[in-house]
Length: 144
Image 1 (cartoon, one colour):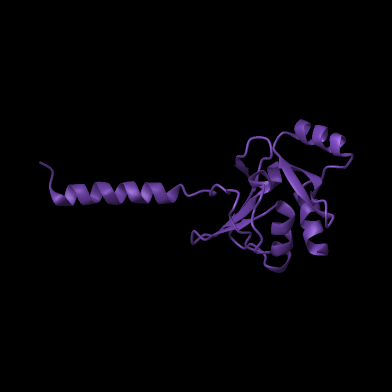
Image 2: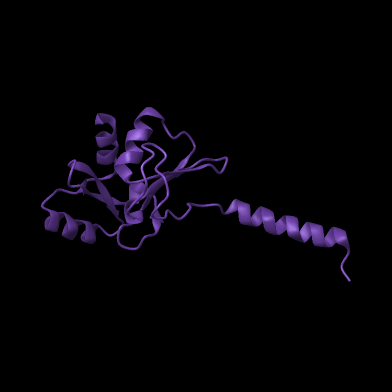
C-alpha cells in the first residue's frame, strides 16, 4: 500500500504537468465575443488570446480580435486563430487570411484564416478578393 505522501506527490506532479501544457481553448458556436459581446456563430472564424494567467478571451473572428488588440496590446498573451479548413488553432503568423463578408445585411467584413496558403488562394479566387497576412489583419484592426 502506498503512503498518502506518495499519492499526494503523484497527484501534484500530474497537475503541474497538465497545467504546464496549457494551450488554446476550443471555440464553439454560441460562445460570446470578448470585444463586441456578440455571439460567435461560425467557430471556424474564431480567434482568441490566452493570458499568462490562463485567462482566455474569445473573439468572433480575427478582425474583431485585431480591433481589440489595436487598443489593448497583447503583452505576453499568446494569440490564436482558427484554421478555417481544419478547425485547429494556429498562430496567426503562420496563417494566410482571406477577407470575407460575415454579414450581408450590414456589409460587415472580417477574415478567414488558412494554414495552407494554397487553400487560401483558392478561397480568395472564389471570393474575388486578395489574401493578406497577419500584419494586414492588424492594420484592418487599427482602422476600425
